[in-house]
Amino acid sequence: MNQSPPDRRLARLSAAAQSWIADDPDPATAKELRRVLDELPDSAADLADRFAGRLAFGTAGLRGPVRAGPNGMNRAVVRAAAAGLCAWLDKSGAQGPVVIGYDARYGSLDFAEETARVVTGTGRRALILPEALPTPVLAYAVRALNAVAGVMVTASHNPPRDNGYKVYLGAELGGVLGAGAQIVSPVDSEIEAAIAAVGRLADVPLGDAAELLDGPIVQGYLAGVAAITDRDDPRDLDIVATPMHGVGGKTLTEALTLAGFSAPTIVAEQNRPDPAFPTVAFPNPEEPGATDRLLNLARQRKADIAIALDPDADRCAVAIPDGEDWRLLRGDELGILLADHLMRRGREGTYATTIVSSSMLRALCLARDVHYEETLTGFKWIVRASRDLAFGYEEAIGYCVAPDHVRDKDGVSAAVLACELAAGLKARLSNLGERLDELAEEFGVHATDQLSVRVEDLREIADAMARLRERPPATLLDEPVASIEDLLPETDAMRLRTPQARVVVRPSGTEPKLKAYLEVIEPVRDGEVGEARERATACLQALRTEVAHALGLLERA
Image 1 (cartoon, rainbow, N blue to C red):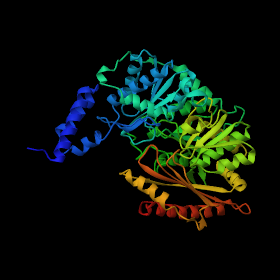
Image 2: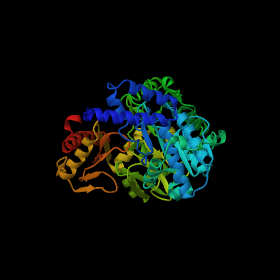
Image 3: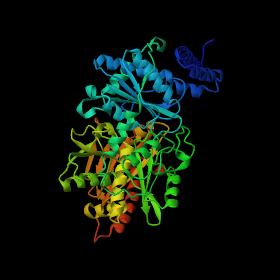
Image 4: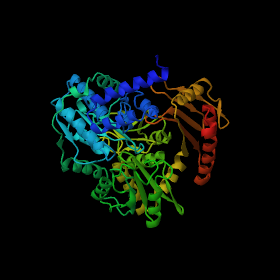
């Protein structure tokens, strides 16, 4: 009797699962997949999702849910990724060790150790960080140890079920600009091809465990972070902080105290690493509610500054007193404050940001005769902006304040520099909010916001981008659209400008989201910064509605 199409599809999925189980090096995930098979046909949708395709290796490496099957993070997928990476390294002829770091998410240590065994199986040294540590420590270690590459097992600020795998290159393969930086195209596609060429996982040679790095590598990172500050500057500052159940709490405390500050008061419930992230719905400081406990602690202590690191501590959010309450600074606001601080300290070189960040950095650089560069979205591009990079930031609370130390975003060093600035302003009876007002008086209020729509079906994003390309709005905020730029093929993005506003629309590179980055510039008249901010806020709200309508997503804005 002939099978129906659904039956044939289920039979193919079952056969693929049996084949996967036979080559799975992890008994736990093999058992997990057998359980899914035992529950057929009720588990058919789950099985289909697990075998919808192999987890793709891109410029952000791997990222996906921890589960059995090719469309998840597990030891089998990691073994193939490590084997592909090593094959690519061998083909390049590059020598040197591979440094491996990991955070405290589910499976992170297992995936790091699996990677190490594959690396040593090729005859290459594998060096593993001494404990679960921030991503910036791994990025530093690649440069400090003259490694050929680095692997960081982390999913950064993704949901608890996820994990990921990021690759960095050393100087031999990354060059001057990319030494210790994340990979960029075409390296990602070359490694992806090498992964696809890996045969049976049982045939991948495995070696000994990695060499465990000791304390000096972490101390070297901390010393470099402390060195970005001026020890003669004021240090009187009451700091509260949260690592958001991630790995940054201890490192942040050590960095601040080494730089001369008092130890921060940490949100107790979020201090220890916990892969379940039990007190936050989404472990991202930018998400609504994620910093509620931090702000409550700041109010109770009447602190001067509040700091939130994301779980792998490569990103940093700062909150400040705002009248009788507290507010989180936007990523653009902290980026401008740090850039202004470094310029006034005399740091020379290139200041860089991305096409979706505020245009205020460009205005600041122009007024101060400082070289400015604008890049595609992502720190892999920011750190490659110039050989003499002095500072780089992106609006998504990522900051590179010491490019010669860590060629990537680093939440710990950004937090230390923000504290130095805040302490210096406090000693002059001022604060970060007042400094923002002073900059607004000089350059105008550059108000930014984001329209972000999460989708279940990625076709919704493609359809919205197509609508915008076919029928872009003729006006925004009652002003004619002066320029429309389609940034293909460099990146899938559209940029629209009017004399007052700027909009950049692009799909997210790491999440199933469509994002529209909005900016309104409002001049300050007669020193009335508050009035200018109110006008800018009203304009942003109107712009948000107009853009959502243009994208066909008004009901979801």
